Length: 259
Image (tube, rainbow, N blue to C red; front, side, top):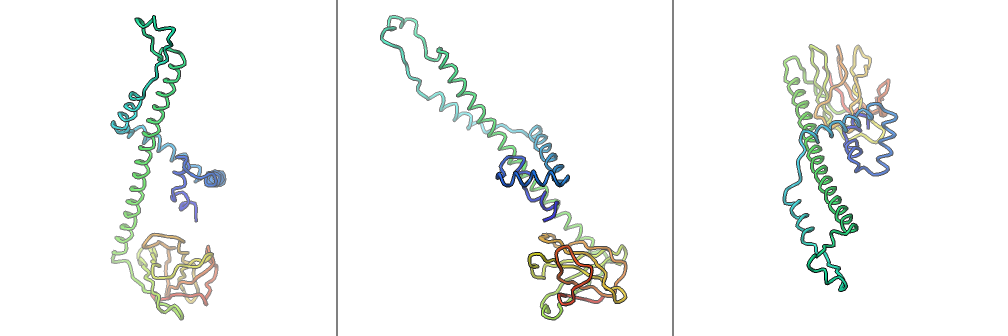
């Protein structure tokens, strides 16, 4: 998993909210010390939470407060006036006037206030996470729509890559913009690569293979942009070690197609 996928996986939010496990907390702190992008993402998430809490803070539902205060008011406070002090009934003294009782009630009210504050914070943080997830999903949909619009351009040439040898049942569609030379690829019809392996695209130029990029692992995109290729007579895809190879492994060729 690359740094961008790690940041967008939700671990940053869990760390900032304090809901990550001790192991996850340690891993995130280690990643932040090694990768500046992770440290910046943590700072940005904290700032965003503070801004959101300031702009969109909402109080807990009124009925929640009423239930808590009602429970407090209905709590029976025992009277402890001794028989020796019965002659002072004309001037009754409540237990709440005793220092210990005042301190006890103070701590009780303070605890209730803390509960209400935490409830409000959790409520707002949940709204923030839901809003952020919706924005990320919308951004992803917009990005896919932009890619699809690019492929509808008259300058884009669709090149089917047919299965080779034992992979004859597989077919991949490649899109090549003949004007800006951008290449787009969809591998949804290829099997998931084994652990430690990755699909790599090759452009065949004058009989020589040119690295056209590796297909990102765990990509949820329908279409992925590859390297810019100025000219080519053929395209092919091989299964290589993760990160790609300098030369294609011909025995691991899955699909190929002429331009």
